[in-house]
Length: 379
Image (cartoon, rainbow, N blue to C red; front, side):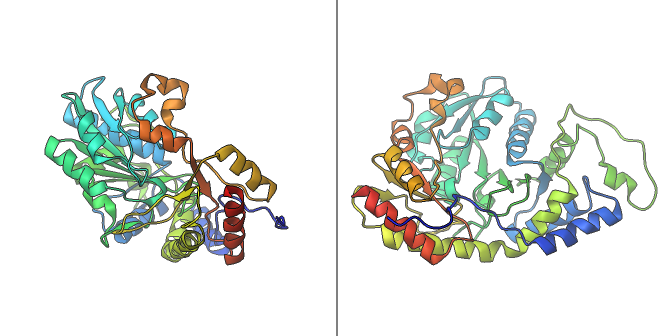
Protein backbone atom coordinates (compact mmCIF):
# COMPACT_ATOMS: atom_id res chain seq x y z
CA UNK A 1 0.00 0.00 0.00
CA UNK A 2 1.30 3.47 -0.86
CA UNK A 3 0.91 5.79 2.05
CA UNK A 4 -0.72 9.11 1.19
CA UNK A 5 1.56 12.11 1.59
CA UNK A 6 -0.85 13.74 4.02
CA UNK A 7 -2.68 12.05 6.89
CA UNK A 8 -6.43 11.67 6.42
CA UNK A 9 -8.25 12.62 9.60
CA UNK A 10 -11.64 11.35 10.79
CA UNK A 11 -12.99 14.90 11.12
CA UNK A 12 -11.71 18.21 9.80
CA UNK A 13 -14.11 21.13 10.27
CA UNK A 14 -14.36 23.85 7.65
CA UNK A 15 -14.83 27.49 8.63
CA UNK A 16 -15.40 30.30 6.14
CA UNK A 17 -12.88 32.43 7.97
CA UNK A 18 -13.50 35.87 6.47
CA UNK A 19 -17.27 35.59 6.88
CA UNK A 20 -16.85 34.33 10.43
CA UNK A 21 -14.57 37.24 11.29
CA UNK A 22 -17.07 39.69 9.82
CA UNK A 23 -19.86 38.30 12.01
CA UNK A 24 -17.66 38.29 15.11
CA UNK A 25 -16.46 41.82 14.35
CA UNK A 26 -20.06 43.03 14.63
CA UNK A 27 -20.16 41.64 18.17
CA UNK A 28 -16.90 43.32 19.10
CA UNK A 29 -17.84 46.65 17.57
CA UNK A 30 -21.20 46.60 19.32
CA UNK A 31 -19.52 45.54 22.56
CA UNK A 32 -21.87 42.59 22.98
CA UNK A 33 -20.39 39.11 22.93
CA UNK A 34 -22.68 37.35 25.41
CA UNK A 35 -26.32 36.28 25.54
CA UNK A 36 -28.55 38.17 23.12
CA UNK A 37 -27.83 39.92 19.79
CA UNK A 38 -26.37 37.12 17.62
CA UNK A 39 -27.94 34.41 19.80
CA UNK A 40 -31.35 35.82 18.89
CA UNK A 41 -30.37 35.87 15.21
CA UNK A 42 -29.29 32.22 15.15
CA UNK A 43 -32.45 31.18 17.01
CA UNK A 44 -34.59 32.88 14.37
CA UNK A 45 -32.51 31.43 11.53
CA UNK A 46 -32.69 27.93 13.05
CA UNK A 47 -36.48 28.11 13.36
CA UNK A 48 -36.67 29.11 9.70
CA UNK A 49 -34.28 26.33 8.64
CA UNK A 50 -35.93 23.52 10.59
CA UNK A 51 -39.55 24.64 10.62
CA UNK A 52 -39.63 23.97 14.37
CA UNK A 53 -41.69 26.42 16.44
CA UNK A 54 -39.08 27.14 19.12
CA UNK A 55 -35.29 27.25 19.38
CA UNK A 56 -33.06 28.35 22.26
CA UNK A 57 -29.29 28.68 21.72
CA UNK A 58 -27.25 27.06 24.50
CA UNK A 59 -23.59 26.37 25.19
CA UNK A 60 -23.66 22.67 24.25
CA UNK A 61 -25.90 19.78 23.31
CA UNK A 62 -25.11 18.33 26.73
CA UNK A 63 -26.68 21.41 28.29
CA UNK A 64 -29.66 21.03 25.95
CA UNK A 65 -30.20 17.43 27.05
CA UNK A 66 -29.94 18.27 30.74
CA UNK A 67 -32.32 21.22 30.34
CA UNK A 68 -34.80 19.00 28.51
CA UNK A 69 -34.87 16.45 31.30
CA UNK A 70 -34.90 18.96 34.16
CA UNK A 71 -37.76 20.94 32.66
CA UNK A 72 -39.80 17.85 31.73
CA UNK A 73 -39.20 16.44 35.21
CA UNK A 74 -40.37 19.59 36.96
CA UNK A 75 -43.34 20.30 34.67
CA UNK A 76 -44.65 16.73 34.70
CA UNK A 77 -43.85 15.97 38.33
CA UNK A 78 -41.48 13.07 37.75
CA UNK A 79 -39.94 11.60 40.87
CA UNK A 80 -36.34 10.77 41.68
CA UNK A 81 -35.48 7.42 40.14
CA UNK A 82 -38.17 7.53 37.47
CA UNK A 83 -36.94 5.89 34.29
CA UNK A 84 -35.79 7.17 30.92
CA UNK A 85 -35.27 4.61 28.15
CA UNK A 86 -32.12 5.29 26.18
CA UNK A 87 -29.44 3.71 24.00
CA UNK A 88 -25.97 2.48 24.98
CA UNK A 89 -24.59 3.50 21.54
CA UNK A 90 -24.14 7.22 22.14
CA UNK A 91 -21.72 9.73 23.58
CA UNK A 92 -21.88 9.53 27.36
CA UNK A 93 -23.42 13.00 27.71
CA UNK A 94 -26.78 11.56 26.61
CA UNK A 95 -26.93 9.23 29.58
CA UNK A 96 -25.07 11.45 32.03
CA UNK A 97 -27.87 14.00 31.53
CA UNK A 98 -30.41 11.44 32.73
CA UNK A 99 -28.46 10.74 35.89
CA UNK A 100 -27.78 14.45 36.51
CA UNK A 101 -31.54 15.07 36.41
CA UNK A 102 -32.04 12.53 39.20
CA UNK A 103 -33.56 9.96 36.87
CA UNK A 104 -32.58 6.37 36.03
CA UNK A 105 -31.36 5.25 32.60
CA UNK A 106 -32.84 2.06 31.18
CA UNK A 107 -30.91 0.76 28.19
CA UNK A 108 -32.86 -0.59 25.21
CA UNK A 109 -31.26 -2.42 22.31
CA UNK A 110 -30.56 -1.18 18.79
CA UNK A 111 -31.62 -2.14 15.28
CA UNK A 112 -29.70 -2.49 12.02
CA UNK A 113 -29.41 1.31 11.81
CA UNK A 114 -27.67 1.40 15.22
CA UNK A 115 -30.62 3.39 16.60
CA UNK A 116 -33.17 2.37 19.22
CA UNK A 117 -35.27 -0.65 18.31
CA UNK A 118 -39.00 0.02 18.80
CA UNK A 119 -39.49 -3.62 19.85
CA UNK A 120 -36.84 -3.29 22.54
CA UNK A 121 -38.25 0.06 23.71
CA UNK A 122 -41.67 -1.52 24.13
CA UNK A 123 -40.17 -4.37 26.13
CA UNK A 124 -38.37 -1.95 28.48
CA UNK A 125 -41.41 0.12 29.48
CA UNK A 126 -42.41 -0.18 33.13
CA UNK A 127 -44.85 1.75 35.36
CA UNK A 128 -42.00 4.12 36.21
CA UNK A 129 -41.01 4.93 32.61
CA UNK A 130 -41.44 8.63 31.87
CA UNK A 131 -39.48 9.35 28.70
CA UNK A 132 -37.44 7.97 25.81
CA UNK A 133 -34.30 9.55 24.36
CA UNK A 134 -33.84 8.65 20.70
CA UNK A 135 -30.31 9.23 19.37
CA UNK A 136 -30.02 9.82 15.63
CA UNK A 137 -26.61 8.18 15.39
CA UNK A 138 -24.53 9.52 12.51
CA UNK A 139 -27.51 11.55 11.28
CA UNK A 140 -29.80 8.57 10.75
CA UNK A 141 -33.48 8.62 11.71
CA UNK A 142 -33.50 4.83 12.18
CA UNK A 143 -37.02 3.73 13.14
CA UNK A 144 -37.83 7.04 14.83
CA UNK A 145 -41.44 7.09 13.67
CA UNK A 146 -42.11 3.63 15.09
CA UNK A 147 -40.41 4.51 18.38
CA UNK A 148 -42.52 7.67 18.64
CA UNK A 149 -45.67 5.61 18.02
CA UNK A 150 -44.70 3.36 20.95
CA UNK A 151 -44.07 6.43 23.13
CA UNK A 152 -47.35 8.12 22.26
CA UNK A 153 -49.32 4.96 22.98
CA UNK A 154 -47.65 4.75 26.41
CA UNK A 155 -47.87 8.48 27.17
CA UNK A 156 -44.09 8.96 27.24
CA UNK A 157 -42.15 12.19 26.69
CA UNK A 158 -39.95 12.04 23.56
CA UNK A 159 -36.49 13.61 23.49
CA UNK A 160 -34.62 13.56 20.19
CA UNK A 161 -30.86 13.68 20.63
CA UNK A 162 -30.10 15.22 17.27
CA UNK A 163 -26.44 16.00 17.94
CA UNK A 164 -25.53 14.38 14.60
CA UNK A 165 -28.67 15.43 12.71
CA UNK A 166 -28.22 19.06 11.65
CA UNK A 167 -29.87 19.09 8.23
CA UNK A 168 -31.28 15.55 8.37
CA UNK A 169 -34.74 15.23 6.81
CA UNK A 170 -37.34 12.50 7.29
CA UNK A 171 -39.95 12.41 4.54
CA UNK A 172 -38.87 15.96 3.66
CA UNK A 173 -39.21 17.43 7.18
CA UNK A 174 -36.92 18.02 10.10
CA UNK A 175 -37.37 14.95 12.32
CA UNK A 176 -37.69 17.20 15.35
CA UNK A 177 -41.34 17.75 14.52
CA UNK A 178 -42.01 14.26 15.93
CA UNK A 179 -40.47 14.97 19.34
CA UNK A 180 -41.43 16.92 22.44
CA UNK A 181 -37.94 18.41 22.44
CA UNK A 182 -34.97 18.21 20.06
CA UNK A 183 -31.35 18.79 21.07
CA UNK A 184 -28.77 19.80 18.45
CA UNK A 185 -24.99 20.08 18.70
CA UNK A 186 -22.82 22.70 17.03
CA UNK A 187 -19.63 21.38 18.62
CA UNK A 188 -16.32 21.84 16.83
CA UNK A 189 -16.47 18.77 14.55
CA UNK A 190 -20.21 18.62 13.92
CA UNK A 191 -21.83 19.38 10.56
CA UNK A 192 -22.49 22.95 11.70
CA UNK A 193 -19.31 23.64 13.70
CA UNK A 194 -18.59 26.40 16.19
CA UNK A 195 -16.21 25.87 19.11
CA UNK A 196 -19.02 24.48 21.25
CA UNK A 197 -22.71 25.32 21.35
CA UNK A 198 -26.10 23.77 20.68
CA UNK A 199 -29.82 24.30 20.37
CA UNK A 200 -32.75 23.07 22.44
CA UNK A 201 -36.07 23.08 20.57
CA UNK A 202 -39.20 22.46 22.63
CA UNK A 203 -42.47 21.79 20.83
CA UNK A 204 -44.34 23.85 23.46
CA UNK A 205 -43.68 27.58 23.75
CA UNK A 206 -44.24 27.47 27.51
CA UNK A 207 -41.37 25.02 27.90
CA UNK A 208 -39.19 27.14 25.60
CA UNK A 209 -39.79 30.04 27.98
CA UNK A 210 -38.77 27.89 30.92
CA UNK A 211 -35.61 26.81 29.09
CA UNK A 212 -34.59 30.47 28.74
CA UNK A 213 -34.93 30.93 32.50
CA UNK A 214 -33.34 27.60 33.48
CA UNK A 215 -30.35 28.33 31.22
CA UNK A 216 -29.75 31.74 32.84
CA UNK A 217 -29.70 30.74 36.51
CA UNK A 218 -33.47 31.07 36.80
CA UNK A 219 -33.37 34.82 36.10
CA UNK A 220 -36.64 36.06 34.66
CA UNK A 221 -35.14 38.39 32.00
CA UNK A 222 -31.79 38.21 30.24
CA UNK A 223 -29.38 41.15 30.35
CA UNK A 224 -29.66 41.92 26.64
CA UNK A 225 -33.44 42.27 26.86
CA UNK A 226 -33.11 44.43 29.96
CA UNK A 227 -30.54 46.65 28.25
CA UNK A 228 -32.18 46.93 24.84
CA UNK A 229 -33.41 50.40 24.02
CA UNK A 230 -30.61 52.29 25.73
CA UNK A 231 -31.69 51.93 29.36
CA UNK A 232 -30.78 49.25 31.86
CA UNK A 233 -33.72 47.68 33.69
CA UNK A 234 -31.90 46.35 36.75
CA UNK A 235 -34.92 44.81 38.44
CA UNK A 236 -35.61 41.12 37.78
CA UNK A 237 -36.81 38.06 39.63
CA UNK A 238 -35.17 34.65 40.04
CA UNK A 239 -37.88 32.03 39.56
CA UNK A 240 -35.86 28.81 39.61
CA UNK A 241 -32.56 27.29 40.66
CA UNK A 242 -31.21 27.27 37.12
CA UNK A 243 -27.83 26.72 35.48
CA UNK A 244 -25.63 28.90 33.28
CA UNK A 245 -26.25 27.06 30.03
CA UNK A 246 -27.03 29.86 27.58
CA UNK A 247 -24.96 30.40 24.45
CA UNK A 248 -23.04 33.53 23.51
CA UNK A 249 -22.92 35.82 20.50
CA UNK A 250 -19.43 34.80 19.35
CA UNK A 251 -20.48 31.15 19.01
CA UNK A 252 -23.75 32.27 17.45
CA UNK A 253 -21.80 34.30 14.88
CA UNK A 254 -19.91 31.16 13.81
CA UNK A 255 -23.17 29.22 13.64
CA UNK A 256 -24.84 31.87 11.49
CA UNK A 257 -22.08 31.54 8.90
CA UNK A 258 -22.09 27.75 9.05
CA UNK A 259 -25.84 27.63 8.54
CA UNK A 260 -25.46 29.40 5.19
CA UNK A 261 -23.42 26.44 3.94
CA UNK A 262 -25.02 23.55 5.83
CA UNK A 263 -27.15 22.22 2.98
CA UNK A 264 -24.29 22.32 0.47
CA UNK A 265 -21.88 20.76 2.96
CA UNK A 266 -24.33 17.97 3.76
CA UNK A 267 -24.78 17.31 0.06
CA UNK A 268 -21.00 16.86 -0.21
CA UNK A 269 -21.14 14.44 2.73
CA UNK A 270 -23.87 12.44 0.98
CA UNK A 271 -21.72 12.24 -2.14
CA UNK A 272 -18.84 10.90 -0.04
CA UNK A 273 -21.15 8.37 1.62
CA UNK A 274 -22.50 7.19 -1.73
CA UNK A 275 -18.94 6.69 -3.00
CA UNK A 276 -18.05 4.67 0.09
CA UNK A 277 -21.20 2.57 -0.35
CA UNK A 278 -20.41 1.87 -3.99
CA UNK A 279 -16.83 0.83 -3.24
CA UNK A 280 -17.44 -1.08 0.02
CA UNK A 281 -21.00 -2.36 -0.29
CA UNK A 282 -20.03 -5.77 -1.65
CA UNK A 283 -16.78 -6.34 0.26
CA UNK A 284 -16.72 -9.62 2.16
CA UNK A 285 -16.26 -9.61 5.95
CA UNK A 286 -17.50 -6.03 6.10
CA UNK A 287 -20.96 -4.53 6.57
CA UNK A 288 -21.98 -0.96 5.82
CA UNK A 289 -24.40 0.44 8.38
CA UNK A 290 -27.49 1.28 6.28
CA UNK A 291 -29.61 4.43 6.18
CA UNK A 292 -33.45 4.19 6.18
CA UNK A 293 -35.01 4.75 2.75
CA UNK A 294 -37.11 7.76 3.82
CA UNK A 295 -34.17 9.48 5.56
CA UNK A 296 -32.07 12.17 3.91
CA UNK A 297 -29.26 11.88 6.42
CA UNK A 298 -26.87 14.65 7.40
CA UNK A 299 -24.17 11.94 7.12
CA UNK A 300 -22.22 13.13 10.12
CA UNK A 301 -20.73 9.62 10.23
CA UNK A 302 -20.04 6.83 7.78
CA UNK A 303 -19.95 3.59 9.78
CA UNK A 304 -18.98 0.06 8.93
CA UNK A 305 -18.93 -3.18 10.93
CA UNK A 306 -15.70 -5.17 10.78
CA UNK A 307 -14.66 -8.46 12.34
CA UNK A 308 -11.23 -7.46 13.64
CA UNK A 309 -11.38 -3.78 14.48
CA UNK A 310 -8.02 -3.60 16.24
CA UNK A 311 -6.17 -4.94 13.19
CA UNK A 312 -8.21 -2.72 10.89
CA UNK A 313 -7.37 0.42 12.86
CA UNK A 314 -3.71 -0.53 13.03
CA UNK A 315 -3.58 -1.08 9.27
CA UNK A 316 -5.40 2.17 8.53
CA UNK A 317 -3.01 4.09 10.77
CA UNK A 318 -0.07 2.61 8.91
CA UNK A 319 -1.67 3.85 5.70
CA UNK A 320 -2.06 7.38 7.08
CA UNK A 321 -5.80 7.06 7.69
CA UNK A 322 -7.26 7.86 11.11
CA UNK A 323 -10.77 6.45 11.71
CA UNK A 324 -12.90 6.62 14.87
CA UNK A 325 -15.26 4.49 16.95
CA UNK A 326 -18.82 5.70 17.58
CA UNK A 327 -19.36 4.38 20.14
CA UNK A 328 -18.26 1.96 22.77
CA UNK A 329 -21.42 0.77 24.45
CA UNK A 330 -21.89 2.98 27.50
CA UNK A 331 -22.47 -0.17 29.53
CA UNK A 332 -18.76 -0.93 29.08
CA UNK A 333 -17.93 2.11 31.23
CA UNK A 334 -17.58 1.71 34.97
CA UNK A 335 -20.39 4.12 35.81
CA UNK A 336 -22.92 2.05 33.81
CA UNK A 337 -21.41 -1.40 34.36
CA UNK A 338 -24.49 -2.59 36.29
CA UNK A 339 -26.38 -2.60 32.97
CA UNK A 340 -23.97 -4.91 31.11
CA UNK A 341 -25.82 -7.70 29.32
CA UNK A 342 -29.06 -5.72 28.90
CA UNK A 343 -28.48 -4.93 25.20
CA UNK A 344 -26.73 -7.82 23.40
CA UNK A 345 -27.12 -6.43 19.85
CA UNK A 346 -25.65 -3.08 20.86
CA UNK A 347 -22.83 -4.87 22.61
CA UNK A 348 -22.01 -6.92 19.51
CA UNK A 349 -22.10 -3.81 17.33
CA UNK A 350 -19.96 -1.89 19.81
CA UNK A 351 -17.17 -4.41 19.31
CA UNK A 352 -17.25 -4.07 15.51
CA UNK A 353 -18.23 -0.47 14.69
CA UNK A 354 -15.75 1.74 12.87
CA UNK A 355 -16.26 5.28 11.56
CA UNK A 356 -14.37 6.14 8.39
CA UNK A 357 -13.17 9.70 7.68
CA UNK A 358 -16.10 11.96 6.87
CA UNK A 359 -15.76 15.69 6.27
CA UNK A 360 -16.24 18.09 3.39
CA UNK A 361 -12.51 18.49 2.68
CA UNK A 362 -12.19 14.85 1.57
CA UNK A 363 -11.45 14.44 -2.13
CA UNK A 364 -12.78 11.67 -4.35
CA UNK A 365 -9.23 10.33 -4.61
CA UNK A 366 -8.95 10.14 -0.83
CA UNK A 367 -12.28 8.34 -0.49
CA UNK A 368 -11.19 5.84 -3.13
CA UNK A 369 -7.84 5.39 -1.37
CA UNK A 370 -9.52 4.81 2.01
CA UNK A 371 -11.92 2.32 0.44
CA UNK A 372 -9.05 0.50 -1.28
CA UNK A 373 -7.09 0.18 1.99
CA UNK A 374 -10.18 -1.02 3.88
CA UNK A 375 -10.88 -3.61 1.19
CA UNK A 376 -7.30 -4.91 1.31
CA UNK A 377 -7.36 -5.13 5.10
CA UNK A 378 -10.54 -7.23 5.07
CA UNK A 379 -9.16 -9.73 2.56
